[in-house]
Length: 184
Image 1 (cartoon, rainbow, N blue to C red):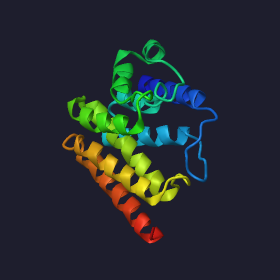
Image 2: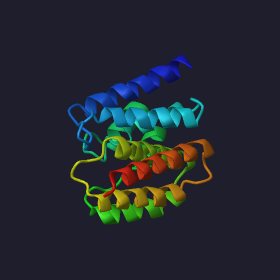
Image 3: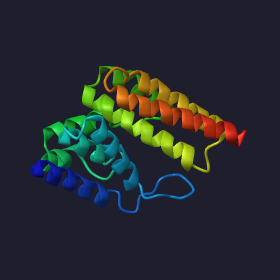
Image 4: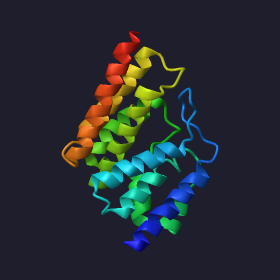
């Protein structure tokens, strides 16, 4: 157990260093590391704390996608399992957003259970942010499009972790309710 805690904290430290200065898109411009920590917390809860590899991958899941490191670096520091899970959920940012989203929703069905749990936790965190601190530049149609996208991704993750699916569903309901209150 002690070595697992050290391992996860090393991943948290690495993620915090790599995301230094990065901010979420909301008006509050929260530190980006808050997102990866929330995703890791959701993953830890979903697995009962029994999968430190997946928790570490959750902490590191955006490092490569956001240009703050490489899979080789993650593998050297945290092992091939962590790098593999992170790779499964990393999008190719050279592609247009619509293509990336379509590929993400299609590909998740064939990914590992670990990747599905991580992806569902990521989308849950994003929906929570959409409800509480949406990007100011996002119009109501763009927010609706994002919610629909997350639903498509979540459908490909169903059956792996019912408790996390319930948290996703609640986050989606909350985001929809906040949107209805906005009246846009």
